Each structure stands twice: as structure tokens, then as C-alpha cells.
Image 1 (cartoon, rainbow, N blue to C red):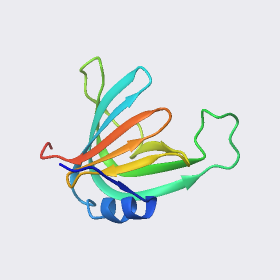
Image 2: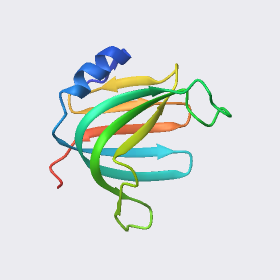
Image 3: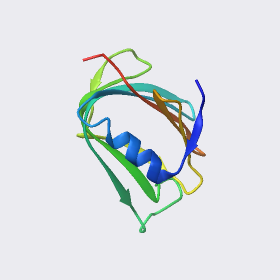
Image 4: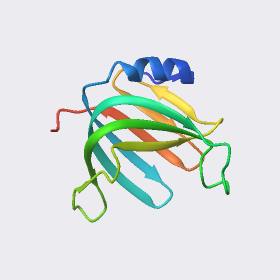
Length: 118
């Protein structure tokens, strides 16, 4: 499948079409890999201009819904909040291949796809 780069606006427009579906988010960030499965209810964004340090993102994508996280310990854990946060940077790359989104940041890579898991 062909990967294409998206603007943040194109990414948002395509992702909004997945509301109401079950999605899987795979995170590969630093030494932390996990998978989250959730029922996507809505999508929102936040901007934090009062950051204490560079570890806290200035922008964040919130995938709102309920679900669980599958960690390295192989023990599914409920999401601690009713959302999944992806830190965004001005340099974030948004890729799409007609079935998966890939968000590539300085910290890591996030893959978002529709799944049949419930």
C-alpha cells in the first residue's frame, strides 16, 4: 500500500470518519511499546502553553472513548482516563495508507487502525 503524507487538517478530516468504530493504537516510544484497543467516541486537541519542561507536549491529540491497554506484561489494563493522549509536535509527520495512520514524532511512532477486536 502506498503511504502518503497528510497535513494535520487532512489527518483530522480522515480520522473523524472513524468515530464510533473500534480502533487499535500501537505505540513505539523510546523503550515503551504497547497496544490500546478502544471504542472511539470523539477526537479532540489540546494546547498547553504553560509547560514546565520540554517533556510535556505543547499540542496533544485526544482519542476519546473506553478501552484497554495491552502492555509488555501482557495484562490488559483499563484505560486510566476516558481518552488516549498522543503528544504532537510541530515536526510530527502524518502518514496514511488507506487503512492505517502513522504519526511520527521525535519521541516515537504511533499507528492507528480500525480493528475488529471488541
